[in-house]
Image: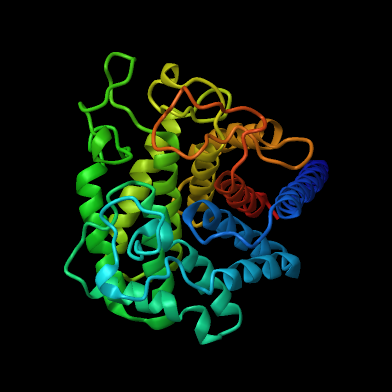
Length: 371
């Protein structure tokens, strides 16, 4: 009997501690999102840097049900006319080079906004919210090209749109094209020995080497985009999809490789295998990795016992170092494509995609905490 009372006491204490941590985590999420929205207008372009924040904002809305966050997203979508790049003449649509102009309709950095628009459509099924998304992505799905995602970031920006849009249209061509394009990118950028992705073909070894024994160079945010992108694909991909096993295989391989690269301080350095190349804290890659790993645990793909230390360390960094007293998220490497030691990364280094990544990780952490 005494043993039963002891176990009940331990359970009660653990439950109370978990409840307090959940409350504290939710408080951080609200503080961070409120800070961002109080200091940044929703009237901003639908390009990747802003749109990545809005994927995080959507996660916060789904967690809290706070209509302020929903209204903020709708204002942004209305400002962008529920479009990405706005060129209407399909003969002028581009994707093979980087471009911020409105001709780059098929360029994934201009398509990530569709992920948010689709989520908003599901809340209120108004066709104007996804008309452009359906037109653009169906056109892409019917094309013969598979080389749309030639840089790793695109696996977060563009790849999840196909399975997310499939949940609305049930058009199998979307899943076929998603897989074909991913296999093309995977063949170009996935390192079969290290199980990490190069940022793009310019960085494939031995074109670029680290200062650590002339080794392979992998950029944390680049691989963060991939792990997070795979999580988002698997969220919407049918369980019985013939393509699911390959996505799961790569997700598991990448998660394990990422775990091995974590710094003792809980963050992932910009140069994953050689911190000397770009030393110091970095939040965006760390947050995307944390989100992806937590998503994997929460959805039964990763074993909690294998990743608990990784998560504990990462959350300590995200909640005590990345998170500033005023609710801002610091130590975000500015826009770039490599571990660049010439770019300042400090407590005041903020960016919409960094805050979005932090919010995604925090929402998954909240779900991971025991009920």
